[in-house]
Image 1: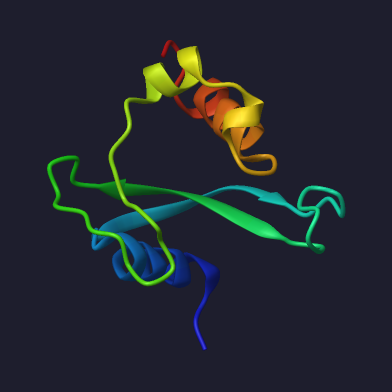
Image 2: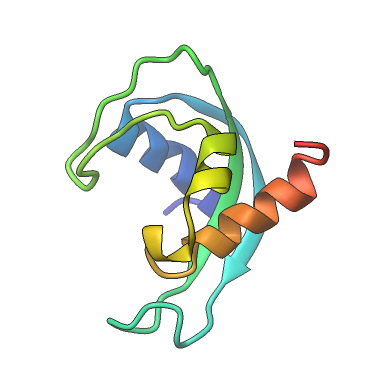
Length: 100
């Protein structure tokens, strides 16, 4: 039994080996058509991490890697992301990283 904010920090540690702090709810997505496999609800948090932290893929993560956010947004399109993840990231950049 744990709250969603505690679960996101735990999952970050389990799947990427990164310690996170200060989870802040960003958005909840639950449109029935966002994942063609089944109805999936996603809760998205912004979490503070050490950018120099060592990462490693856990059992549910195929890989773990730092990406340059500007490069992702400039060079990748919706088809390069799973489901609606590009739109979530775009919304995050527009609302949380003004002037980016």
